[in-house]
Image: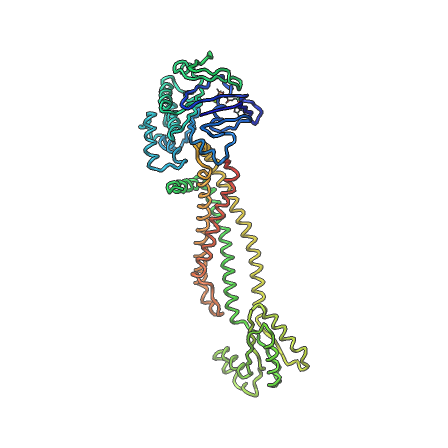
Length: 228
Length: 305
Ligand SMILES: Nc1ncnc2c1ncn2[C@@H]1O[C@H](COP(=O)(O)OP(=O)(O)OP(=O)(O)O)[C@@H](O)[C@H]1O
Ligand SMILES: [Mg+2]
């Protein structure tokens, strides 16, 4: 599903964020990406959905060679990747419903499908009753769930979540983890960067630890491994 | 493209237009002003060419002979004129006919004033009326007719008269007006385009976040661009529609209030029906095109999709 070969990433200002990363993530896996701040976790994720391109090395996602992709083809690759951002990236002037529907609209889904499917995922994340609220009228956890709804609404093959529980209280965090696990059960590959030790140690999955731009540990049913 | 997508782009385009109220207003106004001026020049050009057409029928060369020229000499001159290839027809106007026409042109009072000048007392010379195939050749023909005197010791031709001044001035004014007009209109059009592209640049900046999210959820580049093209088209269309309405209204008023006066000179303005489609259509098409063009510039420059 996701394959990286000797990936290097140096940003324009000269910061090298990744140095020689090799990894294979299979279909339907659930992977935690852990590591200290500035280790390169977000960079790793951004390469997957091609917000950044590698300085060196090969990435393929869902059979597409991402680095060599023609610009015209990028949208089609992204349609198969749902991204959950740490800062949600919701549009402030659109309601919860509209924020989710937006992701279907831009890929030109017929209108009647948009309505049905949007309500379906809002129900899944437990926000059907808040469909018409603006992001400012929602709590942090609710906004995060809208972001998740938007990421899953087009039924992508992969979900990339950068610290989806970053700013949330433990209870809300668990709610979101249950949601992600359920989506994973339904067949979606999940790559999630996190600093949440409790979650990683409780809901055991594959753990990939990145430090200073390299993978230092890759463990099935691993633990968080850092003291906070 | 799906119909619902078309609707969506239109909706977004209109939303963009209303977002930067003042900038939109400024760019619409600049489109309106520049195309209004273009329209004025178009109307001017249309009317001048119509006027030229009308004068064509009235334009002829009058060749007056010396009063003492005899019949055979006159016939010889007529044949010489007929041999000029650019000449369409030559009509002999005997002095009696000339007097009759003169009298008619003077109306009632003239009749009395010209009493007693008939026959031997007629002071008018015999004359020819020469018509050209092409009104622009009139002065050329006139020179050739004047040249007949060079080989004629008696210098039988007294005078060659034609609407030289009117015709030549008309053509030179038309040309000058057109050149100045092109210059002004081009300058204004560039300014209008610049304003439109600035307006759209502002929209793009205002919607940057939205655009980046659209990209991340897999919107095609064309999908992202369309609303901005539509925004440009809307600005161009409504700006030019506005100037067309003002222009055509103003013109119809002008035609209405002055047609009586102008009619005295045996000429008329191009009617509003004649110009409506041509001028209105051109201005609106051009305005819309300018708007889309202006947006293309911004989209290419600021929308790195
Ligand atoms: N756009 C950028 N330009 C320059 N340097 C960058 C950019 N993005 C990240 N970096 C640098 O690359 C390194 C890795 O950053 P990254 O965001 O991947 O870390 P991270 O593991 O996600 O950290 P955190 O846990 O704090 O989110 C850091 O040194 C960071 O400063
Ligand atoms: Mg990060």
